[in-house]
Image 1 (cartoon, helix red, strand yellow):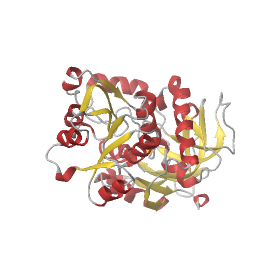
Image 2 (cartoon, one colour; image 1 turned 90 degrees about the vertical axis):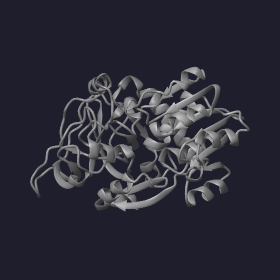
Image 3 (tube, helix red, strand yellow; image 1 turned 45 degrees about the horizontal axis):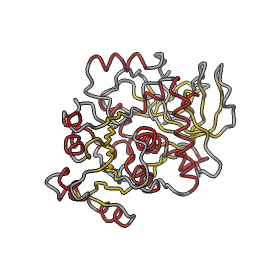
Length: 364
């Protein structure tokens, strides 16, 4: 889903472009200009190295939008991929950052669900111009969730994309239930570390992959862990862990590199959900009678008709965080000046859990 916006067919590109918001761009201004703010800006896509701090005009929310004073944010693979390769339908110059949490500063016309002073968090429009790596950001009101009582800024800023994607995949799509067996790829990753917790809390048996120190860490938490670096075949390892039966459900966070093996390890008639697959689906999914789901988080954001469903998913997932049933693993923390370093760390694909970015002093 949000993890890969690359290698799409021309038809897919046209559809995504049609979904994208109107072409509003970030307006770069001179240092010291009135009504301006500092922000991490890319003037054109294709080179993460060119991401830089600029002064930009503080944006005004259009109808159906909020302006948010950003307190915390985080990074997702989509952020560095957008910067490094560009995203279909994206506009430039653009302020980067999809996930964020903060305080509503102003509302556009037709916004009735929020008012200035409300605490909110959200996954923003990846195609838009005013992301969360800035003092102020623009959010589409239909895709914004209130920060529940009892949730701190650090948690609010790291959960939207990864937690809500995991919840949607497991429960809104596959309707995972107690007693089932589920495979979650990359159980120490952003989406994966939330997904394994959600599945375990639901009473499912969880099988996941990891490497290095993460293998022992996840095993201590009660998961069946496959050290993928020591296995010749992921399919065989999953089948071995299930006595040859295969899993009832699979959440594939990695896409092409393991889709074939994952699908082959799902029991006949089971379910397979992917969030990063852009290549053609392996034919084995059809011959095994699988129900296949594609979770595309940006689609929920840029489609107002999906808003109510998306916010309902957020509320259910957030409630599990507040209750303590699910906890974010924040492995790295950066301040505003560290945004580029955080994104560069994402490039290697070895970030455990989430990276927190403290945008303002209010995050302390």
